[in-house]
Length: 226
Ligand SMILES: [Zn+2]
Image (tube, rainbow, N blue to C red; front, side):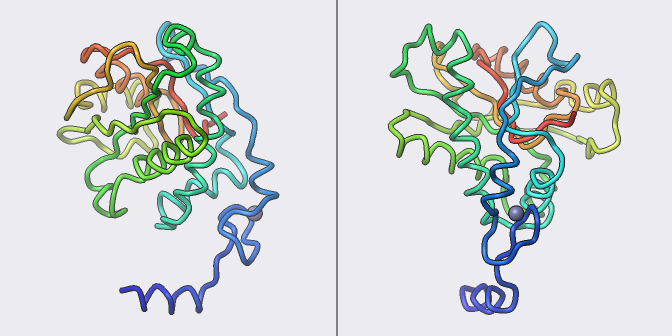
């Protein structure tokens, strides 16, 4: 189907996912407006794992996430991955796990799971694709990074859009399960997601990892709602 892709590229040249400027998938202006790592505080995460987002879920960054996630612009995985790769060392520097493990320690990126129906309709887990790009970029920069896609959603999980914090927690309770080998204990492990809303998904993921003996160093998302 490469010919089809080529024809589509000719008919619809790349436009910035943030501002629709022609010629690039994500322009420098939107990239510079979406760079401001901040700590995310949520009741669902209270007393537990720390969470960080590269930028607020608003403006160009919100449009970027929607274009990537809902409109199938798979090429944006590179943009998403690069933003995460920039943020990973900053987040690790702010956590005790990195200090304990030492600067040369390997770090693990665990993608947050998507509902199976969403994975199928999107042609794969979009967060995992971004995490793989991020790990590749980190390795190019000399940071030892691996992706461990070990979290799955089990059973009937509703689309969380429109649910309250308590509703999301109930929707996810006991539904995040582990498949495969988790990251080794003692190595910094970041849970990666696209948007933090109530923090319920991140909290459920961290609980599942905790039961597998893995301490979640922090949650790192591209965006978080304000
Ligand atoms: Zn733009």
